[in-house]
Amino acid sequence: MLTKFGGLAVILVWGIVFPWLLLALSRLFHPKKPTPAKLLTYECGLDTQGDTWIQFKISYFMYALVFLAFDVETIFLYPWAVKFQSLGLFAMVEMFIFIAILIIGFWYAWKEGALEWM
Image: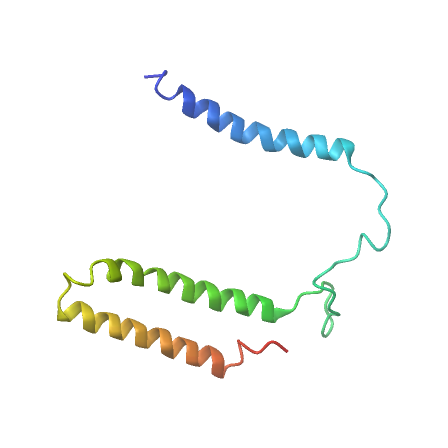
């Protein structure tokens, strides 16, 4: 039984050791000349808004959340499309309800300004 999992153990050990080895070599050979410009926080060159200590524009985060929500929900359409011919009327009605929920969510995000860039 040990021989069956020997390859898996080698891959697991290599997957743990190799990244640490690369990080150690990088730390050993990288240039150690920090300048004030290199120590600044950078977020796409935009100035901060308000009293913040890091430069982060919330609209990037909102776009990512909206994309993630609709991307995950869209994945649920694929199994339905594959089995479309064999599904009955109940599945059709359920998918129209699901798509209606997607449209309502998109409308709400648009209304709240989550899709506004500036």
